[in-house]
Image (cartoon, rainbow, N blue to C red; front, side):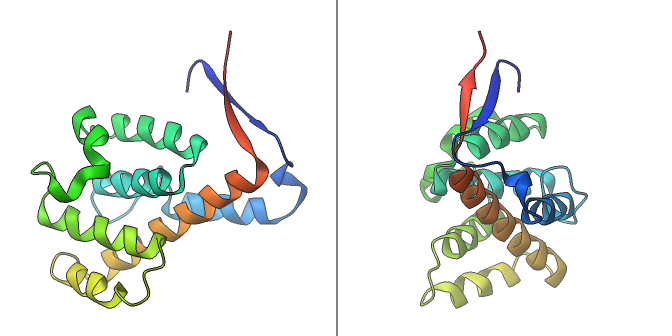
Length: 154
């Protein structure tokens, strides 16, 4: 991410072991992980969590990662309105609905969201989708707690 650096305004996460555990999770299901689900879909899920949780660090990082994965810029820009879009196919829509339900903790509506995934993904892919969303929610909260903010260089 050229031209941008990040500063912690609240605390250094490396002061406790938790940051290392979070980094292990990121290696397992983060944007550089080798997963069974399609890389572009995984990146859309990460970016949608970052949008919902308004994490500056994650928005910048995962917008760039989406670009690097070949997700068209118009699709990235259109992500918040995926429900009304023809740019997203049915599997993507099912995964994004699940992502939003898990992120917003929609307990009453969650079972149908999971069920919709089963029509489009196998059990391992569903586990990966869940792990991606959970991991991103952890990271957005960690970045909020540590107060990590973007600063333009120069």
